[in-house]
Image (cartoon, rainbow, N blue to C red; front, side):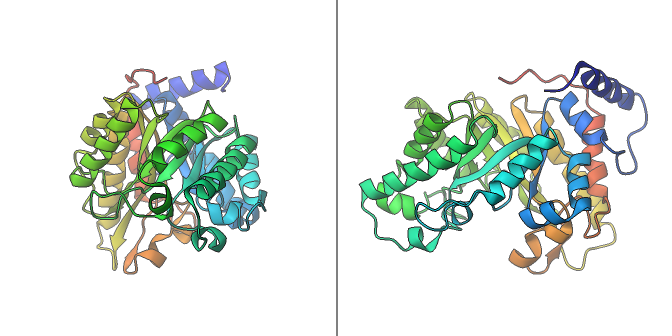
Length: 354
């Protein structure tokens, strides 16, 4: 919670910004968090353990520019439970401790995913009852430990195939069937009734068959009173392909009573970048933040990494670069100014979200 003084300062800052020219450079220290809070959204960033522990400048970029954090990897199954019944809390505890020490919100990522599973789990031979028990033990341990500390969880991550509208035949699907999604959401709600529970997916930001399939799944879950509270639009975009109608597709899900978030935003640029690519990318970052502001129940925009030095893009997408708002030396890029522009040119006229 923020003090009355902090709220007054944030409101004054946002009002003052509306009366002046749009920003042409990077924001001042603390400016972005104040503006995000004025608009009642979280501006988040994915964090990695090693630089979080050892790099002071890395930590400063987080605390000066963001209001929430997501653990990029350390809360995933292979890190939390590398061996059956042996839990490693060092990484998650570090993230939670850092966030709480700096008054940052926390998104939990992720509980069920087809990747980054420990070998004992991925290569095991499981009956339905056995795998259900494994899932229950893991969720009880993780959600129980951080109950009240983590505001939202990506319970189900990427349940659909990469490029088709079909549910992915992952370990959970093969053993438990498609209803593993409802089971996991119900278990998560049992162990942390206050946390917002999400399905997190990519390739849904511009509509199409995959978006329609997710929408149908969500309708079915809600009809059955399964505890689902939000949809994560990951937002791993290629420069030049950020959809103009992102807000429309988010509204489809908020019209069902859910909240939405942009959970893993980055915009990768083909190498070598053209001279004006970074300025164009700034406009794309602006448009994504504005899309969230246009949807009253959009509650968070999280960028997927602190700087280009820590981005997953070069490893996973060779030939692409410059995906994040800070460069490899922690210098602010035009993208950061684009986010500032989005937050500074719009008054807060959003309905409160529960």
